[in-house]
Length: 423
Image (cartoon, rainbow, N blue to C red; front, side, top):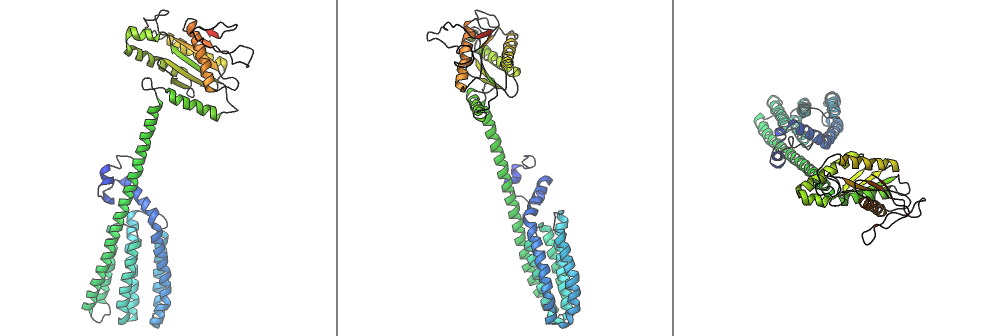
């Protein structure tokens, strides 16, 4: 419904009419107007049916000789037509069917009034025709049909009124015709009012559609901006801020029943030397290539983010120690196999990465887990790069010693049991 081909701005902002709208939009408007206004037409038909029955004893009181005629004309014929039209408006019909119902109603009302008026004699004839004309005038305001069908129904009612004045029992045909023209002008005023109402409804519908379309466009733009705000512009993977939000969401939603989680801190070895040797353009290309390799090596539900300049954080959810190590090694080996040149590296002529791996154990916060992974990454660098080091569990968990920590001087202190490394 918000297709810009179907809903061009010219149609939604400029003055237009229903018949000028694309078929799909016209169909939507028909369904909209039907739901909003069909109850009015059915209410009028129901009221007309009841009023028709009330007029039967009125006919008899005015002219007792009309008893049989009113029973047949009002009680059977007109009532059957009104019930049929009421049932027809029970569900949406094509526009021409809706329009034809008002024409049928005009003919029914005028022929009923003319027949009973003629049988009642000269005094009743003109009164009944006039009453019939104004009864039909009220129907114009309640039937939500196209203006051309309203004009057709009005023409039918006016023609029947004038025709019966000419051939019916009237004292002064010319005077009666003059009065008929006066009443016809009033009916046309009702029809013009109905036209203005229809135009107002169409304008309101277009405004509503334009509002919905603009809201959808704004929501789409907001989603795109939100996506851009969550991504690293160079690599297209998540940035540090959005990753932190995801980690916080994981920790809050799985508190007390958290599946095994592993953090990988990944850093490109000797990246500064590569930048200095080949330039920043080559450095950017290297970061993008490494990011793609990391993303390809993990599952869809895992988190891959650019944590710093050449540093990446990977969050592996619902994993095991062996599974996390397998992912880390897959990442490391796939990058080493790229054969990217790194002439500034004192240890390798190709681009490699070092990885620190930390498993969630005990009552740890994300910050503590990142700290352990970062300490393991430092040790991987210290031990010669291009390897994965697994951080030991935190103090008080398991039999192994506490996590690796950096010394204030920048040197890693000696440990009785250092983190394990896989090269």
